[in-house]
Length: 102
Image (cartoon, rainbow, N blue to C red; front, side, top):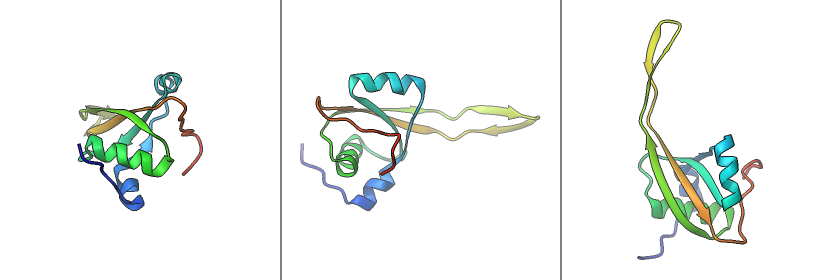
């Protein structure tokens, strides 16, 4: 595989936001961080973006797409958007504090 490089502005386009829940907080014990990413982003792009923005070494990237759900609120039905999440596993000795800004 070739080494993927990415500019800092492109890295901000790939990673939308960190996902902060109880489950992702427990995953941080295993050196894992979860991000909401652009739906067209590939695993090499996500890896390059995380390494560029946070100056860490990424071990693996796993992605999942949560399909949009039909929700009803006060009698109005709406379809939520699809959401792509990336679980980024970091090399040992590296960590990301998602509570602080970039």
